[in-house]
Length: 352
Image (cartoon, rainbow, N blue to C red; front, side, top):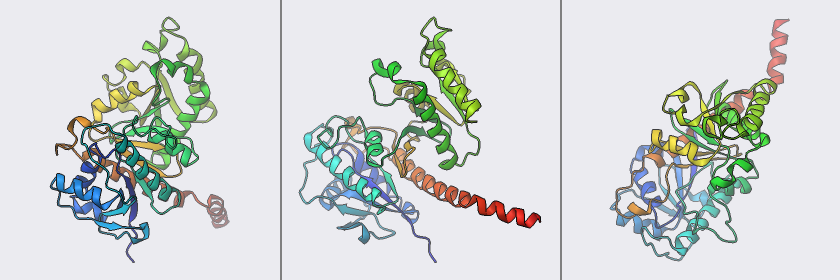
């Protein structure tokens, strides 16, 4: 019997950015359709317009319900009837409106188990704001919708970086980082590495908050007063292999990151500048800690190249592959770890 393909829900992001371009270019490789059943949350007219604009030959079928999605096809779920105006490279109110309508519909489908994973195209964090969306990005919105605690986790084959704080002003970072937050995010990262990435005893490096980790209090005391005690508790009380804090300025250039399975960075640019320098184009933004799988490319709307037919779909393609891998890894982990007491009982009876 043929195994049922994983259903991938795809919100289109800002319609004036490169979202639909990279989505359609990804599925020009028809082999991906052998791995999953993609469902774009948009409208036939919008997809047809962009398909024609970029002279993309990928065929799709329009559907009015997820149950009508066909394997081996690129499916487009019609979420609206009107025809939005596409103005490539421009931040418009319409761009934010339809980005949210697409995301909202896809998220509901994810919550209702109508799709298996979510792979999101980039949104504009400004024009999407409304009474219904008042979040700094996808991560926080999905955490609320799925009732979970999330970790922004940038992943590639060679480097994985999670964030203690993500889309917050730099001036607020120090006040937000507490011992509780460090322990919570480290636990999420450790659990994700085990369940989602099949690492049995992951090693996690934690970067310092201040330059040179404060130089014993000369440049700040947060690393000694907050970070070190949290890591000590995680290591000795919870048996989580955390190490640090490490001075961030030399950690990546010295290749020290290669000694660890993942890195936990206190704030956005401290982690993402390094990640995008080392893995840009091949990296994926993964939302760890949630009950459902969500990934996205490691870039934004790229207004400056939108509509010019030069956007590279590699990161979006990798986001698809990562979502599929994590979904399968979670299923395998669940299967291997269920009913542990029964397995133990059988082993004891066998010994008798």
